[in-house]
Image (cartoon, rainbow, N blue to C red; front, side):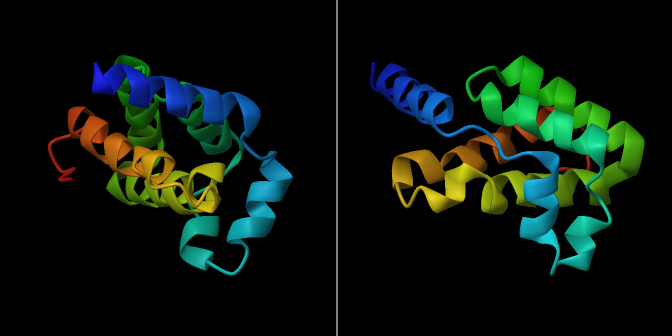
Length: 117
């Protein structure tokens, strides 16, 4: 039952805090060349889909696989960091929301054998 409540909290948060535009995200990560190099328009779309569907494990894994297929482990790792640290999750200041980055980490175990959460 507690998971249902957590799911509702994160869903409400996502609905009221949209994922930033591609331009906004590029500005946020501009000082991090390692992230900047791994984040293009396709990656932005996949990360947005992950963010907007926080409880859909299959969809998150599928988007992770798309990121991995396009750029390998480095792209997967850097895009995870972008979602975790540069999306509205991080700026929320709410531990119940911030933990979603950790959940994505766990879901990404289904993307490839290299990924370890």
